Image (cartoon, rainbow, N blue to C red; front, side):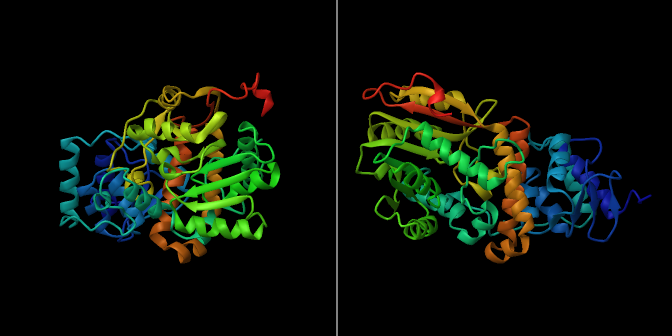
Length: 427
């Protein structure tokens, strides 16, 4: 039995203070080799007292996340099992803002850190963390471009390792868990094209086009003429190369452009896949107004976006996901999205929930990242690879728990051709 005064045992006391629980839900391996915690529980290695110091300054998901990204904590086994144990035990949450530790728990954490010699000035954040105040006014064009560059201009080769040959960075559509990632992503691209009613010669605007996968699919399979826009120069570079290699330069144009600056409507259809999360609640009315104006009468818009399933908590600048992953990202609930679209003069034709599909997609991405870990680290650095592993695994658990959802909302601008009678026209 480990001594109650061992380093690991004292670290277990600190974990209990952070989580607000009676017993640490994980087994801890301390920097001196001692071990404490339930037998058979997931193991977290604490490599340095600096990890505990981070928790003193940020006692919650942000402090734990910083320590993991910096390599001061190590998840020694299955990342899903470890995160599930942590988030089901106490204050940590896989989605939404967790309640803050009580004053008593914070004082207990400070006392434990003092006993272990871990007190001191706040450690500098890992370089992968974004300091939002550097970007200027939130959701200005310049700040949006900087936020997008932080997330997407990592390395095209890194994303290829994670996403696979489809190069699609949004929820796939799975016939079953055995479908396979590439087939599921192709099914999603085809579903989007069918919902939008694409026909040869139709003009499609792909807002947030990523690496061009939807644009290529729409041009190759449906004969559409596509303009894809992104704020990521790295994405645009690869997307243009893929278009040229496919011989589709006469039908697909890729631009580095803000959706608010598109000058050449009207379009027959607009796809916004995984982009509205970067708009924010305050910007939704303008977003809908802009896309409405870019559609011809009778034209369709497909808005595919992640949503809070229990009401929107709003934007929080001090969560792990905001600091490390999606600066300025903000999720709405489904009702808020539908209301914004209807208030903007668009008619709702269909709503499809794909929550379980995104959980499968994220697990597939984590599997690919871990399979190619050494290559991912060499391309993006160890800290960035750790950020992606942590956020994708935690997000998968949030979708599985029903805390997050993802929805495709199909709408039409009034006028022009009447909407289809039944959804069987595209399923």
